[in-house]
Image (tube, rainbow, N blue to C red):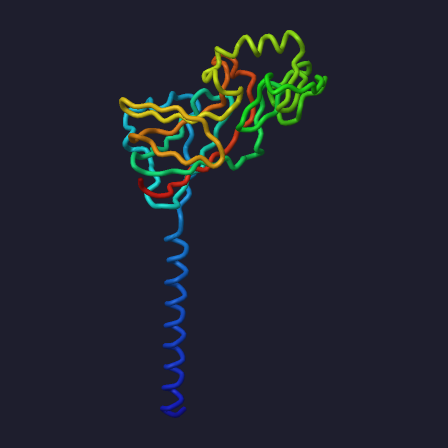
Length: 230
């Protein structure tokens, strides 16, 4: 084999190695430098910010990083173990989960909630909706426009002042951040831009009467994205 042939083989091998290195570089930059989305470690029993070392909670460090928070309708707090930081802007967006619905007994609704005042004459049903795990056979109503009968309607209207947020519908999605000496409650709409005034843990819940969470079922997923600084 001539020297020229050997040189050609070596040159081709060097070119292949060069192109392979370039492809590897661009691929790793795309994979590892892209946005990071955290699946939060939810705590459904703990009260919001009731931890010994809140500063050790994970945060979203880079713009376009995100976190997925699973909000169970049975939990009064849904402590996310995610710390939102002051002077940062976040976008909150409901993305569903197993479905984009959750249930108040037999009433199927979404993050916007439901109320008697919306009107509607949908009759009761002897069968529980498939989405509602805690429904009893005679609870009987499904849908955002609800008529629970004379007694049921009176109970819902009478309990309005007992809701955690009396001015909001039942099962409206409520956001809550709490840190040392600071707390803030806000309504979550799609897509909500939010910036906390101080560092705080993010929590959320379905608006309900505090002692009625036992008949709730289902959950929603919320995507929290860090979009930049104030």
